[in-house]
Length: 340
Length: 159
Ligand code: FES
Ligand code: FES
Image (cartoon, rainbow over all chains, first blue to last red; front, side, top):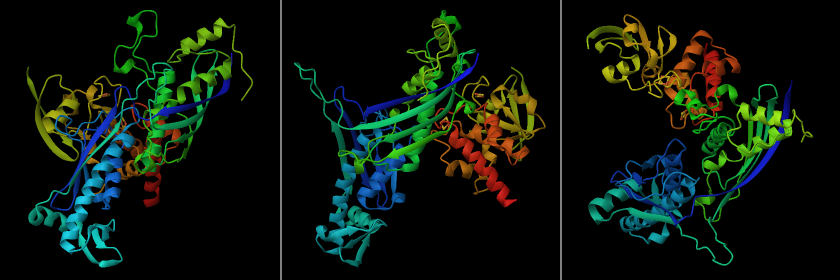
């Protein structure tokens, strides 16, 4: 009876968003007379950072400070339509819609500023700090706040913009079955090292090393946060979680929250992550999206690591101690493979 | 049902209320006092989202009868910051990106405070042990452990 170490690798290509009937999201941007901007979305932020990243995208496109942008995701009944926050689509789909809306709003803002400064809108630029000035003559300037006030009370203009980003439905070629379900792919590779106890069937995570290619990381700290948390969820799916009973009789399965297993802080392992940035041609500022895909490579890598450790091929999730033990027994004992 | 008169200190302030027999502390805090910082996760002692300190010790408020805190002192996340200033643990959680949806955060902070109050220089293993009754669905725990360790070392730097 012994503990065996094993190492497994997995690579994935992850299509950003989905395309089973077209994949659209909308955004609206408008300014208040205070010179602050509101982005209206129906896309929900569950903590992944949707609000932060769309705020950044809007501010950057408008050319105003990020503090001057507020993102409102209050109500999907009244907000512009969104397919939802899933399939790693938030940054890419919603971000593109926000960018389009902010571009349109910027056009109106520059027109309104041009009217106040009595110049041509094409000669104006933003300084990113809340001012609009004549190119090459920074002293001839007006604040975005004053532009917003003038547009609202003097010019009778709404500084606003509409945006939608749609990945249209891809037809399937009836002869070849070919289609292009996605416009943009993220990639990842993960190496997992595990320790398998051939007496108890328990699998302990030893360490993970990964590389993720997900376009430009618009907010690197949030990307890292997603990758760390997502990998934990991958461990959870690989080794712990299931709504299905894993014993012969459903009555012996998990019945409530307390019996629904998830890894605790003691079950995690060191995880070294490299983020590779290859800007996506159709992403907002080159971004793809680090959502769901951060959990995916962990599962096959762990299964491969278990094979490497004790020679059993686990093809059913989650890989519980009982399943490992039965498989080891069926092959007549642990058979550690060549260390890789 | 008979009501019981109850008095205790809530984040340093005396409170007096009537509770129904059998009501747990989590419900009393949220519904009678209006302190929404302890969260309801499972109501079964399995997630730690409802963690509070009673006389400085970590307890699950969903499993504590409200009547048992009569005359005692209850601390919740609501009392952690000092006026407008965040507690070092809160600052560290922010800096280490230790919250995503934030639902576990109040419980995590109280579990971490209980640890640092009795052990200002914990090891990584001690931090893991201290938060092992708290479930987080988002962060993967690593950033939370790092935040607690960072708060501990910033505390040592000030002391
Ligand atoms: S709500 Fe008290 S432990 Fe989950
Ligand atoms: S941050 Fe979401 S549960 Fe911990």
